Image (cartoon, rainbow, N blue to C red):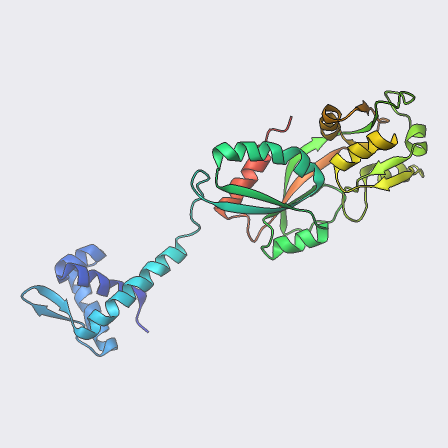
Length: 298
């Protein structure tokens, strides 16, 4: 098999038609170029180039393989050049993200409005699946990232974790529930029927863990799969629902709900972006990670 450097010299001489100029183009001496040309002739068992009044011309055999060599070298150079830069203003791209409801509820409106101006051909597709399936799909390259809740799930070391946002828990209740204090007690928390949105698919929850550590539990009247539905159920039923504060504020703007403080000592709600080390060097994904980390969620 010919050395790639020798093949490159064939292409250069075909363009220059002169050994001296070709040697300069290849940044080697004329003697070294002539020596290399003799090696090519020997290995291909063909003269390859012959001197004519128009300069060095390829033989019919050389003329037939030069386009193949040129194309192959161009493809090899492109393949080894590294990942192409990502231009959000011009490039069309769909990012597939596994995420909890908090991300969809709080981040998607902000990101969609921003991308409309900054990246008009970029789309975000949010997938709602169990955490285990989401992580597996990231490793298989089917999802670009997963956005989940910290401390409630095991994350293998080969995933990279990027903190996104921190929030604190409050409760929401129908405005008709005037019997409830503005700051709930633990007694309220363990006696009032509640609507539950699991933070992760296993059902693990910050508040339940906090109560369990005190050998307490709260009565869960119903389970929902989104904050929007939970807010409507709270209005209709009079049940409490514990949610992160930013979610509560949005729901209270849309529905007749009160925001109630919870007892002191509850853990915070930490949202993280998880990417796989196998893929997150890609320019498009690096751009997305930066956008997500810098999203302005009030």
